[in-house]
Image (cartoon, rainbow, N blue to C red; front, side):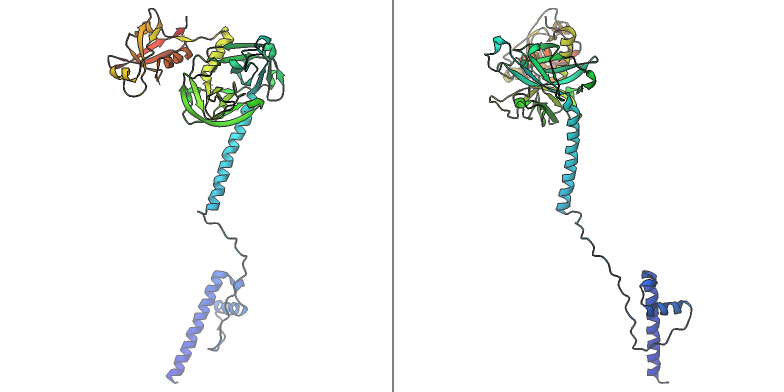
Length: 411
């Protein structure tokens, strides 16, 4: 046998073995049902140890057919702006829905109040009162908290209270405090259908915290707006003929308009935390600079009015310097910041005297609140709960000291 002929036969045998191996591998991967009929026969014969049919060196093994597949839907890349925008929109929608559900819970506690002035006051500007109020519960009875200036020219028979469900009530009794502009109304109604607001702790509010206000601006009942706490502890504000002698306001950028007075402010826990009272605007509309009385002050005053018929206002018993400025404070060693207020005189047998305050003491803080003027301290004292002991931080002979004082009601 010629060498060339042996080489050709060896080459054909090697090629046949290679193709058999390829067919076996294809069957293992894709399954026998995807093989061409000729390949299935070859694979079966190989498995049963049956000698394979001789093949011509020129035979071509048919290709494995590729099964038809459905066109895949193109996916948006994970970092695609369109996908991210949709996700952000869905998240925002979910958050806004939470706020919407929260509002539905506390809006039934908000009322619309209208007062007709007595005949002798009808010629006065702004004598007709209109605003809002909030229903709260004290000692298993419901009351409405609002601003005194809405009712000051009227009497209970001329006041109408519009509930969220459309009922119209007349107050049974009205209490008010002219120095803080707080008023309380009692009423007779089926208490099973009344929804009171949850009362929150206004001392826990923080600068920048989001809040929701409800009122009746321009007579539009149950109007809702939102904003943030813009500042805490505003005082010495002039609101014209509105009597607000003692001030410790929360400032908000939620727009307050005529008719928002007396309406509640809520935190995102759905808790009543303030009564909206005034705006810095001199025009008829709001400017985004509104002022509200903290709920801790309103509730304390209201409870005292209901229980005792009048509110208490703290008394310290010290005369303060009303011209104590930054320059004078620096000479006494007051560090940069609020100046505090200087004690000119301590009255005998008063809380200040019993606590050991002395002339020329500089009062720097009241219960941790920095003091920036004499009127600031006076407001905080007047609005404090006289049943609690307060702490004063003072500077005496350039040394800081802390003094505890039990206030009393103003004589």
